[in-house]
Length: 481
Image (tube, rainbow, N blue to C red):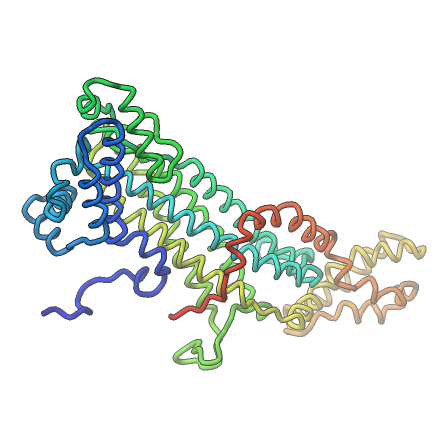
Protein backbone atom coordinates (compact mmCIF):
# COMPACT_ATOMS: atom_id res chain seq x y z
CA UNK A 1 0.00 0.00 0.00
CA UNK A 2 1.39 3.39 -1.03
CA UNK A 3 2.35 5.82 1.71
CA UNK A 4 0.27 8.98 2.06
CA UNK A 5 3.52 10.87 1.47
CA UNK A 6 4.16 9.30 -1.95
CA UNK A 7 1.49 11.23 -3.85
CA UNK A 8 1.28 14.90 -4.79
CA UNK A 9 -0.61 17.22 -2.50
CA UNK A 10 -1.15 20.88 -3.22
CA UNK A 11 0.60 23.22 -0.76
CA UNK A 12 -2.52 25.35 -0.98
CA UNK A 13 -4.31 22.58 0.91
CA UNK A 14 -1.54 21.38 3.20
CA UNK A 15 -0.01 24.74 4.16
CA UNK A 16 -1.81 27.86 3.11
CA UNK A 17 -5.54 28.11 2.36
CA UNK A 18 -8.32 28.03 4.95
CA UNK A 19 -10.48 24.99 5.57
CA UNK A 20 -13.53 27.01 4.61
CA UNK A 21 -12.18 27.81 1.17
CA UNK A 22 -10.86 24.29 0.69
CA UNK A 23 -14.32 22.92 1.47
CA UNK A 24 -15.93 25.05 -1.24
CA UNK A 25 -13.65 23.39 -3.80
CA UNK A 26 -13.92 19.91 -2.30
CA UNK A 27 -15.49 16.86 -3.93
CA UNK A 28 -18.04 16.68 -1.13
CA UNK A 29 -19.31 20.21 -1.76
CA UNK A 30 -19.20 19.86 -5.53
CA UNK A 31 -21.04 16.58 -5.85
CA UNK A 32 -23.57 17.20 -3.09
CA UNK A 33 -24.38 20.41 -4.99
CA UNK A 34 -24.90 18.31 -8.14
CA UNK A 35 -27.44 16.29 -6.20
CA UNK A 36 -29.12 19.43 -4.90
CA UNK A 37 -29.44 20.65 -8.47
CA UNK A 38 -31.14 17.41 -9.48
CA UNK A 39 -33.53 17.83 -6.54
CA UNK A 40 -34.27 21.46 -7.45
CA UNK A 41 -34.85 20.49 -11.08
CA UNK A 42 -37.26 17.74 -10.05
CA UNK A 43 -39.11 20.07 -7.68
CA UNK A 44 -39.49 22.73 -10.35
CA UNK A 45 -40.57 20.21 -13.00
CA UNK A 46 -43.09 18.71 -10.59
CA UNK A 47 -44.54 22.12 -9.72
CA UNK A 48 -45.08 22.76 -13.43
CA UNK A 49 -47.00 19.55 -14.01
CA UNK A 50 -44.54 16.75 -14.77
CA UNK A 51 -45.24 13.44 -13.04
CA UNK A 52 -42.67 13.56 -10.27
CA UNK A 53 -43.89 12.61 -6.82
CA UNK A 54 -43.06 14.00 -3.41
CA UNK A 55 -41.81 10.55 -2.48
CA UNK A 56 -39.27 10.63 -5.30
CA UNK A 57 -38.08 14.08 -4.28
CA UNK A 58 -37.89 13.10 -0.63
CA UNK A 59 -35.86 10.01 -1.51
CA UNK A 60 -33.31 12.15 -3.38
CA UNK A 61 -33.13 14.74 -0.59
CA UNK A 62 -32.18 12.07 1.95
CA UNK A 63 -29.17 11.02 -0.11
CA UNK A 64 -27.79 14.45 -1.03
CA UNK A 65 -24.73 14.21 1.21
CA UNK A 66 -24.40 10.40 1.27
CA UNK A 67 -22.00 9.95 -1.65
CA UNK A 68 -20.15 6.67 -2.22
CA UNK A 69 -17.04 8.11 -3.84
CA UNK A 70 -15.42 4.70 -4.39
CA UNK A 71 -18.49 3.46 -6.25
CA UNK A 72 -18.56 6.63 -8.34
CA UNK A 73 -14.88 6.24 -9.23
CA UNK A 74 -15.44 2.67 -10.35
CA UNK A 75 -18.44 3.70 -12.42
CA UNK A 76 -16.47 6.51 -14.07
CA UNK A 77 -13.75 4.06 -15.05
CA UNK A 78 -16.44 2.18 -16.98
CA UNK A 79 -18.37 5.12 -18.46
CA UNK A 80 -15.51 7.61 -18.88
CA UNK A 81 -18.10 10.26 -18.00
CA UNK A 82 -18.13 11.92 -14.59
CA UNK A 83 -21.72 13.17 -14.65
CA UNK A 84 -23.22 9.88 -15.80
CA UNK A 85 -21.17 8.03 -13.18
CA UNK A 86 -22.79 10.17 -10.49
CA UNK A 87 -26.23 9.80 -12.08
CA UNK A 88 -25.91 6.00 -12.01
CA UNK A 89 -24.76 5.82 -8.38
CA UNK A 90 -27.38 8.35 -7.26
CA UNK A 91 -30.04 6.33 -9.09
CA UNK A 92 -28.95 3.15 -7.29
CA UNK A 93 -29.36 4.95 -3.98
CA UNK A 94 -32.72 6.37 -5.05
CA UNK A 95 -34.43 3.58 -7.04
CA UNK A 96 -37.85 5.18 -6.91
CA UNK A 97 -36.51 8.50 -8.17
CA UNK A 98 -34.14 6.97 -10.72
CA UNK A 99 -36.40 7.62 -13.75
CA UNK A 100 -36.55 11.39 -13.09
CA UNK A 101 -32.97 12.15 -12.05
CA UNK A 102 -31.34 14.54 -14.55
CA UNK A 103 -34.60 14.68 -16.54
CA UNK A 104 -34.11 16.84 -19.64
CA UNK A 105 -30.71 18.10 -18.47
CA UNK A 106 -27.24 18.05 -19.94
CA UNK A 107 -23.97 17.60 -18.06
CA UNK A 108 -23.43 21.36 -17.87
CA UNK A 109 -26.67 21.70 -15.94
CA UNK A 110 -24.88 20.31 -12.90
CA UNK A 111 -21.31 21.19 -13.88
CA UNK A 112 -21.68 24.84 -14.78
CA UNK A 113 -24.40 25.69 -12.29
CA UNK A 114 -22.32 24.15 -9.50
CA UNK A 115 -19.31 26.19 -10.60
CA UNK A 116 -21.38 29.36 -10.41
CA UNK A 117 -22.61 28.47 -6.93
CA UNK A 118 -19.02 27.82 -5.81
CA UNK A 119 -17.82 31.08 -7.37
CA UNK A 120 -20.57 32.99 -5.57
CA UNK A 121 -19.85 31.35 -2.22
CA UNK A 122 -16.10 31.82 -2.62
CA UNK A 123 -16.51 35.51 -3.40
CA UNK A 124 -18.71 35.89 -0.33
CA UNK A 125 -15.98 34.27 1.75
CA UNK A 126 -13.17 36.45 0.37
CA UNK A 127 -14.84 39.85 0.58
CA UNK A 128 -15.01 40.00 4.41
CA UNK A 129 -11.35 38.95 4.50
CA UNK A 130 -10.44 42.03 2.46
CA UNK A 131 -12.56 44.17 4.78
CA UNK A 132 -10.77 42.70 7.81
CA UNK A 133 -7.36 43.63 6.41
CA UNK A 134 -8.62 47.12 5.56
CA UNK A 135 -10.02 47.52 9.08
CA UNK A 136 -6.67 46.65 10.68
CA UNK A 137 -4.74 48.89 8.33
CA UNK A 138 -7.18 51.70 9.06
CA UNK A 139 -6.32 51.43 12.77
CA UNK A 140 -2.63 51.40 11.88
CA UNK A 141 -3.01 54.47 9.67
CA UNK A 142 -4.82 56.37 12.41
CA UNK A 143 -2.17 55.47 14.97
CA UNK A 144 0.73 56.62 12.79
CA UNK A 145 -0.89 59.38 10.75
CA UNK A 146 1.42 62.01 12.36
CA UNK A 147 4.63 59.94 12.29
CA UNK A 148 6.95 61.57 9.71
CA UNK A 149 8.94 59.23 7.52
CA UNK A 150 11.01 59.51 4.39
CA UNK A 151 9.03 59.24 1.21
CA UNK A 152 10.70 57.48 -1.69
CA UNK A 153 10.59 57.98 -5.44
CA UNK A 154 12.79 55.81 -7.66
CA UNK A 155 13.61 54.08 -4.34
CA UNK A 156 15.58 57.21 -3.46
CA UNK A 157 14.78 59.42 -0.45
CA UNK A 158 12.24 62.08 -1.39
CA UNK A 159 9.94 64.55 0.36
CA UNK A 160 8.61 63.39 3.71
CA UNK A 161 5.28 61.66 4.15
CA UNK A 162 3.88 59.89 7.23
CA UNK A 163 3.72 56.21 8.13
CA UNK A 164 -0.08 56.43 8.30
CA UNK A 165 -0.38 58.14 4.92
CA UNK A 166 1.68 55.39 3.30
CA UNK A 167 -0.66 52.79 4.80
CA UNK A 168 -3.56 54.61 3.16
CA UNK A 169 -1.98 53.94 -0.22
CA UNK A 170 -2.16 50.22 0.56
CA UNK A 171 -5.74 50.55 1.77
CA UNK A 172 -6.79 52.41 -1.36
CA UNK A 173 -5.64 49.54 -3.57
CA UNK A 174 -7.52 47.03 -1.43
CA UNK A 175 -10.69 49.14 -1.60
CA UNK A 176 -10.47 48.98 -5.38
CA UNK A 177 -10.17 45.19 -5.12
CA UNK A 178 -13.20 45.05 -2.81
CA UNK A 179 -15.16 47.09 -5.34
CA UNK A 180 -14.14 44.87 -8.26
CA UNK A 181 -14.90 41.61 -6.46
CA UNK A 182 -18.20 42.99 -5.12
CA UNK A 183 -19.19 43.81 -8.66
CA UNK A 184 -18.30 40.28 -9.75
CA UNK A 185 -20.46 38.86 -6.98
CA UNK A 186 -23.37 41.20 -7.72
CA UNK A 187 -23.19 40.62 -11.49
CA UNK A 188 -22.93 36.84 -11.18
CA UNK A 189 -25.92 34.97 -12.61
CA UNK A 190 -27.02 31.35 -12.85
CA UNK A 191 -26.72 29.25 -15.99
CA UNK A 192 -30.10 27.80 -15.21
CA UNK A 193 -31.96 25.27 -17.33
CA UNK A 194 -30.72 25.71 -20.90
CA UNK A 195 -30.22 22.28 -22.49
CA UNK A 196 -27.43 20.91 -24.64
CA UNK A 197 -26.66 23.96 -26.79
CA UNK A 198 -28.53 26.58 -24.81
CA UNK A 199 -31.78 26.41 -26.81
CA UNK A 200 -33.85 24.64 -24.11
CA UNK A 201 -35.10 22.25 -26.82
CA UNK A 202 -35.21 19.20 -24.52
CA UNK A 203 -37.31 21.04 -21.95
CA UNK A 204 -39.61 22.40 -24.62
CA UNK A 205 -40.23 18.80 -25.62
CA UNK A 206 -40.84 17.75 -22.00
CA UNK A 207 -43.51 20.44 -21.68
CA UNK A 208 -45.11 19.68 -25.07
CA UNK A 209 -44.01 22.91 -26.68
CA UNK A 210 -45.10 25.18 -23.83
CA UNK A 211 -42.37 27.83 -23.92
CA UNK A 212 -43.90 29.74 -21.03
CA UNK A 213 -43.44 26.76 -18.71
CA UNK A 214 -39.85 26.33 -19.87
CA UNK A 215 -39.14 29.94 -18.93
CA UNK A 216 -40.84 29.36 -15.56
CA UNK A 217 -38.74 26.25 -15.03
CA UNK A 218 -35.56 28.23 -15.68
CA UNK A 219 -36.54 30.91 -13.18
CA UNK A 220 -37.73 28.45 -10.51
CA UNK A 221 -34.47 26.48 -10.49
CA UNK A 222 -32.51 29.74 -10.52
CA UNK A 223 -34.34 30.95 -7.41
CA UNK A 224 -34.01 27.59 -5.64
CA UNK A 225 -30.24 27.91 -6.11
CA UNK A 226 -30.28 31.34 -4.46
CA UNK A 227 -29.86 33.50 -7.57
CA UNK A 228 -32.19 36.22 -8.74
CA UNK A 229 -31.34 35.97 -12.42
CA UNK A 230 -30.01 33.50 -14.95
CA UNK A 231 -28.01 34.40 -18.02
CA UNK A 232 -30.49 35.14 -20.79
CA UNK A 233 -28.45 33.25 -23.39
CA UNK A 234 -25.84 30.51 -23.11
CA UNK A 235 -24.23 27.95 -25.32
CA UNK A 236 -23.80 24.58 -23.72
CA UNK A 237 -21.91 26.48 -21.00
CA UNK A 238 -22.20 29.88 -19.46
CA UNK A 239 -19.76 32.19 -21.20
CA UNK A 240 -16.23 31.76 -19.92
CA UNK A 241 -16.03 35.56 -19.96
CA UNK A 242 -17.49 35.26 -16.46
CA UNK A 243 -14.38 33.37 -15.36
CA UNK A 244 -12.20 36.01 -17.04
CA UNK A 245 -13.85 38.81 -15.05
CA UNK A 246 -13.58 37.01 -11.73
CA UNK A 247 -10.02 35.77 -12.15
CA UNK A 248 -9.03 39.22 -13.42
CA UNK A 249 -10.34 40.77 -10.19
CA UNK A 250 -8.54 38.13 -8.13
CA UNK A 251 -5.31 38.67 -10.07
CA UNK A 252 -5.68 42.41 -9.51
CA UNK A 253 -6.00 41.69 -5.79
CA UNK A 254 -2.73 39.79 -6.14
CA UNK A 255 -1.01 42.92 -7.47
CA UNK A 256 -2.20 44.92 -4.45
CA UNK A 257 -0.98 42.31 -1.99
CA UNK A 258 2.37 42.01 -3.76
CA UNK A 259 2.87 45.77 -3.83
CA UNK A 260 2.09 46.22 -0.14
CA UNK A 261 4.23 43.29 0.97
CA UNK A 262 7.12 44.42 -1.24
CA UNK A 263 6.92 47.77 0.56
CA UNK A 264 6.97 45.98 3.91
CA UNK A 265 10.02 43.98 2.87
CA UNK A 266 11.86 47.16 1.86
CA UNK A 267 10.95 48.86 5.13
CA UNK A 268 11.99 45.77 7.10
CA UNK A 269 15.41 45.90 5.43
CA UNK A 270 15.71 49.48 6.70
CA UNK A 271 14.58 48.34 10.18
CA UNK A 272 11.80 50.95 10.19
CA UNK A 273 8.90 48.52 10.29
CA UNK A 274 8.50 44.79 10.90
CA UNK A 275 5.84 42.16 10.46
CA UNK A 276 5.04 39.98 13.51
CA UNK A 277 7.95 37.79 14.63
CA UNK A 278 7.21 35.09 17.18
CA UNK A 279 9.47 34.39 20.15
CA UNK A 280 10.36 30.89 18.90
CA UNK A 281 10.60 31.83 15.22
CA UNK A 282 13.89 31.18 13.41
CA UNK A 283 14.88 33.67 10.74
CA UNK A 284 17.81 31.77 9.26
CA UNK A 285 19.41 28.37 9.75
CA UNK A 286 22.87 29.93 9.39
CA UNK A 287 22.37 33.45 10.77
CA UNK A 288 20.53 33.31 14.10
CA UNK A 289 20.22 37.10 14.41
CA UNK A 290 18.06 37.48 11.30
CA UNK A 291 14.38 38.45 11.38
CA UNK A 292 13.34 37.66 7.83
CA UNK A 293 9.95 38.99 6.63
CA UNK A 294 8.75 35.48 5.76
CA UNK A 295 5.04 36.35 5.92
CA UNK A 296 5.42 39.18 3.43
CA UNK A 297 7.58 36.96 1.26
CA UNK A 298 4.87 34.29 1.34
CA UNK A 299 2.28 36.83 0.30
CA UNK A 300 4.44 37.92 -2.62
CA UNK A 301 4.97 34.31 -3.69
CA UNK A 302 1.26 33.48 -3.59
CA UNK A 303 0.34 36.77 -5.23
CA UNK A 304 2.71 36.15 -8.14
CA UNK A 305 1.02 32.80 -8.79
CA UNK A 306 -2.38 34.45 -8.54
CA UNK A 307 -1.39 37.13 -11.04
CA UNK A 308 -0.26 34.55 -13.60
CA UNK A 309 -3.59 32.67 -13.47
CA UNK A 310 -5.33 35.46 -15.36
CA UNK A 311 -3.75 34.35 -18.62
CA UNK A 312 -5.28 30.89 -18.15
CA UNK A 313 -8.79 32.28 -17.78
CA UNK A 314 -8.34 34.71 -20.66
CA UNK A 315 -6.96 32.10 -23.05
CA UNK A 316 -9.63 29.58 -22.11
CA UNK A 317 -12.39 32.03 -23.00
CA UNK A 318 -10.62 33.07 -26.20
CA UNK A 319 -10.38 29.48 -27.45
CA UNK A 320 -13.94 28.32 -26.80
CA UNK A 321 -15.41 27.36 -30.18
CA UNK A 322 -19.03 28.10 -31.07
CA UNK A 323 -21.31 26.64 -28.36
CA UNK A 324 -18.37 25.07 -26.41
CA UNK A 325 -15.36 22.77 -26.49
CA UNK A 326 -14.16 20.52 -23.71
CA UNK A 327 -10.63 21.88 -23.62
CA UNK A 328 -11.77 24.31 -20.96
CA UNK A 329 -12.52 21.60 -18.39
CA UNK A 330 -9.11 20.48 -17.12
CA UNK A 331 -7.79 24.03 -17.18
CA UNK A 332 -10.72 25.45 -15.21
CA UNK A 333 -10.47 22.72 -12.56
CA UNK A 334 -7.00 24.06 -11.79
CA UNK A 335 -7.36 27.77 -12.51
CA UNK A 336 -10.58 28.59 -10.64
CA UNK A 337 -9.71 26.62 -7.52
CA UNK A 338 -6.12 27.87 -7.34
CA UNK A 339 -7.17 31.48 -7.93
CA UNK A 340 -9.49 31.44 -4.94
CA UNK A 341 -7.27 29.29 -2.73
CA UNK A 342 -4.24 31.52 -3.47
CA UNK A 343 -6.24 34.68 -2.79
CA UNK A 344 -7.61 33.19 0.42
CA UNK A 345 -4.16 32.14 1.64
CA UNK A 346 -2.58 35.48 0.79
CA UNK A 347 -5.35 37.43 2.51
CA UNK A 348 -5.15 35.32 5.67
CA UNK A 349 -1.40 35.87 5.80
CA UNK A 350 -1.85 39.58 5.11
CA UNK A 351 -4.40 39.80 7.94
CA UNK A 352 -1.91 38.16 10.28
CA UNK A 353 0.69 40.73 9.21
CA UNK A 354 -1.65 43.71 9.58
CA UNK A 355 -2.68 42.57 13.06
CA UNK A 356 0.89 42.82 14.34
CA UNK A 357 2.87 45.43 12.42
CA UNK A 358 5.66 46.96 14.51
CA UNK A 359 7.02 50.47 13.86
CA UNK A 360 10.39 51.73 15.07
CA UNK A 361 10.11 55.55 15.29
CA UNK A 362 13.68 56.06 16.48
CA UNK A 363 15.09 54.32 13.43
CA UNK A 364 12.77 56.35 11.21
CA UNK A 365 13.89 59.57 12.91
CA UNK A 366 17.54 58.66 12.42
CA UNK A 367 16.97 58.08 8.71
CA UNK A 368 15.14 61.39 8.46
CA UNK A 369 18.02 63.17 10.18
CA UNK A 370 20.39 61.81 7.54
CA UNK A 371 18.38 63.25 4.67
CA UNK A 372 16.39 66.17 6.04
CA UNK A 373 19.26 68.67 6.05
CA UNK A 374 19.44 68.45 2.26
CA UNK A 375 15.64 68.68 1.94
CA UNK A 376 15.55 71.72 4.21
CA UNK A 377 17.84 73.78 1.97
CA UNK A 378 15.00 75.69 0.33
CA UNK A 379 13.41 76.45 3.70
CA UNK A 380 16.73 77.79 4.99
CA UNK A 381 17.08 79.99 1.92
CA UNK A 382 13.55 81.37 2.36
CA UNK A 383 14.21 82.12 6.04
CA UNK A 384 17.42 83.99 5.15
CA UNK A 385 15.61 86.04 2.51
CA UNK A 386 12.95 86.99 5.07
CA UNK A 387 15.80 88.04 7.38
CA UNK A 388 17.15 90.37 4.70
CA UNK A 389 19.60 88.10 2.87
CA UNK A 390 20.19 87.84 -0.89
CA UNK A 391 18.69 84.67 -2.36
CA UNK A 392 21.45 84.04 -4.89
CA UNK A 393 24.23 84.47 -2.33
CA UNK A 394 22.39 82.21 0.13
CA UNK A 395 21.78 79.59 -2.57
CA UNK A 396 25.49 79.46 -3.38
CA UNK A 397 26.40 79.20 0.32
CA UNK A 398 23.99 76.28 0.81
CA UNK A 399 25.17 74.61 -2.41
CA UNK A 400 28.80 74.63 -1.29
CA UNK A 401 27.99 73.40 2.23
CA UNK A 402 25.71 70.68 0.84
CA UNK A 403 28.44 69.39 -1.45
CA UNK A 404 30.89 69.29 1.46
CA UNK A 405 28.37 67.44 3.67
CA UNK A 406 27.54 65.04 0.82
CA UNK A 407 31.21 64.17 0.48
CA UNK A 408 31.36 63.31 4.18
CA UNK A 409 28.45 60.90 3.73
CA UNK A 410 29.42 59.28 0.42
CA UNK A 411 33.21 59.31 0.53
CA UNK A 412 33.89 58.89 4.23
CA UNK A 413 30.77 57.08 5.45
CA UNK A 414 30.04 59.73 8.05
CA UNK A 415 26.73 61.26 9.14
CA UNK A 416 25.23 64.20 7.31
CA UNK A 417 26.71 67.28 9.02
CA UNK A 418 25.12 70.00 6.86
CA UNK A 419 23.24 71.47 9.83
CA UNK A 420 26.48 71.73 11.84
CA UNK A 421 28.15 73.49 8.91
CA UNK A 422 25.22 75.94 8.70
CA UNK A 423 25.43 76.64 12.44
CA UNK A 424 29.16 77.33 12.21
CA UNK A 425 28.92 79.67 9.23
CA UNK A 426 28.54 83.30 10.41
CA UNK A 427 26.49 84.07 7.31
CA UNK A 428 23.51 82.19 8.76
CA UNK A 429 23.62 83.87 12.19
CA UNK A 430 20.33 85.77 11.56
CA UNK A 431 18.31 82.52 11.44
CA UNK A 432 20.08 80.24 13.92
CA UNK A 433 17.37 80.79 16.50
CA UNK A 434 14.82 79.48 13.95
CA UNK A 435 16.88 76.52 12.77
CA UNK A 436 15.32 73.88 15.02
CA UNK A 437 11.84 74.83 13.86
CA UNK A 438 12.98 74.90 10.24
CA UNK A 439 14.29 71.33 10.68
CA UNK A 440 11.17 69.99 12.46
CA UNK A 441 10.21 66.95 10.36
CA UNK A 442 6.52 67.53 11.03
CA UNK A 443 6.62 70.72 8.98
CA UNK A 444 7.70 68.74 5.89
CA UNK A 445 4.74 66.32 5.68
CA UNK A 446 2.24 68.71 4.16
CA UNK A 447 -1.41 67.64 4.60
CA UNK A 448 -0.52 63.96 5.07
CA UNK A 449 -2.19 63.72 8.50
CA UNK A 450 -5.35 65.49 7.31
CA UNK A 451 -5.43 63.31 4.22
CA UNK A 452 -5.48 60.21 6.42
CA UNK A 453 -8.49 61.50 8.36
CA UNK A 454 -10.33 62.56 5.21
CA UNK A 455 -9.60 59.33 3.36
CA UNK A 456 -10.76 57.16 6.25
CA UNK A 457 -13.97 59.15 6.72
CA UNK A 458 -14.85 59.46 3.04
CA UNK A 459 -13.58 56.23 1.53
CA UNK A 460 -12.85 53.61 4.18
CA UNK A 461 -15.66 53.86 6.70
CA UNK A 462 -18.51 53.55 4.15
CA UNK A 463 -17.03 50.28 2.88
CA UNK A 464 -16.36 48.87 6.34
CA UNK A 465 -19.93 49.72 7.36
CA UNK A 466 -21.16 47.11 4.87
CA UNK A 467 -19.12 44.47 6.68
CA UNK A 468 -19.91 45.55 10.23
CA UNK A 469 -21.37 42.20 11.30
CA UNK A 470 -18.52 40.20 9.78
CA UNK A 471 -15.91 42.41 11.40
CA UNK A 472 -17.42 41.82 14.85
CA UNK A 473 -16.32 38.17 14.75
CA UNK A 474 -12.84 38.62 13.26
CA UNK A 475 -10.24 36.94 15.45
CA UNK A 476 -6.47 37.16 15.43
CA UNK A 477 -5.08 34.94 12.69
CA UNK A 478 -2.47 32.40 13.74
CA UNK A 479 -0.39 30.83 11.00
CA UNK A 480 0.28 27.15 11.56
CA UNK A 481 3.29 27.14 9.25
